[in-house]
Every structure is written in C-alpha cells, then in structure tokens.
Amino acid sequence: MILVSSCLAGLKVRYNGTDSLDVRILELMRENKAISVCPELLGGFSTPREPAEIIGGDGEDVLDGKAKIIEKSGRDVTELYIKGANLTLLKAQEVGATLVVLKENSPSCGSATIYNGDFKGKKKVGNGVTAALLKRHGFTVTSEERLFDHLVEK
Image (cartoon, rainbow, N blue to C red; front, side, top):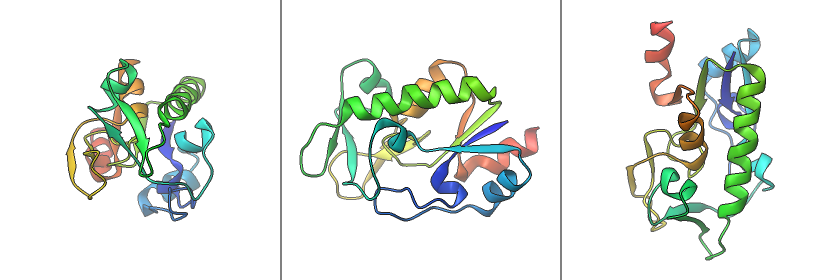
C-alpha cells in the first residue's frame, strides 16, 4: 500500500483550499493501491488555514526541539504539526505502507525541499516534520516530483 498526501489525490485540503492533483496518484487511488492522508488536518487544522513555514531548521530540527513551525502572522503551530506527523506515522504503520508520497515544499510533507522560513517563496534543502518522522521510522518517503523513479524501481 502507498500512503499519499490528500492534496495530491485531488482533495482540496491545502492551506489555501486548493489541491495539487497528480493524475498518477489519482490512478493509484482508483486501483486501490494507495490511501490518502493529510497530516495538517490530522493535526487539527482546518481548510483554508494560514501559511506556515519552519523557522530555525527543518523537520528534523522540529522533532529535536531545535526549530519551530510558525504561521505567517507569527503564531507557533509546532505542536499541531507534530501531532499530525505522529498520527500520519500511525496510519502508515496501520496500512503497512511500502512507500509514502508527500507534497514537496510543505513544512509537513516536504521530503527534499521546504520553504526557508522567510515567507518570500524561497526554498531550501530539508524535510518537513511528517517526512522526517516517517523517515526516522524506516519508511521510504518521496515526493510527487520523484514518484516515477520509485514506481520504476518496483
């Protein structure tokens, strides 16, 4: 089973109420090879919600208590993101996920790049908090941008 970000499956759950539909993900869902999850919604957020970025590091640093996830207005939402990451981990374990495909650049789901914390659209290398937690627990995590590479390997 493949665990995928809900926004990639076409659900309008992104911070701004949109989706990031990837037709390959939709096809995996239709074939019952994938199940979707949104760490932010699991953490207690609603849609739409204020954009947030990791300040002071990446998802690894958030998990280690060295960085925070802050909304654009300045509210610290670190605990909600950690809660969502933990619930996503439980879901991945429950379904026996063999691959996790998360939305790149997200403070939760980014698996190679995230926004740099200045809310100006600049990116940096790093994991979001959910991607970092899943990787720590041995899951193979990738993004929609590198999905094809993983499907070819199978």
